[in-house]
Image 1 (cartoon, rainbow, N blue to C red):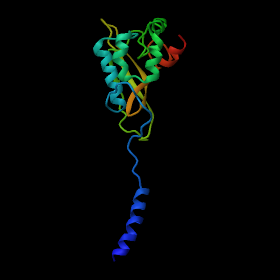
Image 2: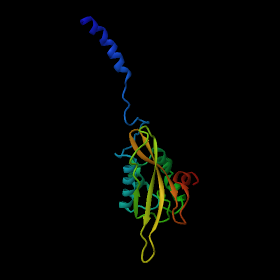
Image 3: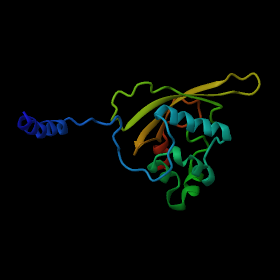
Image 4: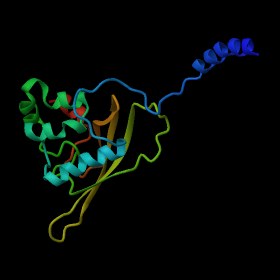
Length: 183
């Protein structure tokens, strides 16, 4: 009886090694910058909430951009702060809130929930973002949408691009990355 269990033990050990458990999130690279905890919708909402709290509408200066670093992908951050020429690049951008696509920016932002991530190994998720701005006096409020492209860097979800959707004129169209590339 002891001989049979000694023979079966290595076989059972070999079989157990064949059944590996996949982690819920695969590491999709590294990230050396600070990170904000949460899923893609949570991180996007935290980013826009930070923008609204600070009253930062328009182009971020170097200090503001440093505050945004935990929320931005490495590629987007580097594009905004490119080799110390970030100030010159931002100065050439159109006079608008680059993270919403509207000329004045929002006073309210709601990121639509990514309640279910269909593929746990997903590396990017586009999220609809409802934006609005209260107008002074009798003028009606303005509402529009954007799409925040959230990507995973390491185990962090970060903002990589913003697609401008239906912003009120004279807002821009296209994406934040396209706007940065043309300047």
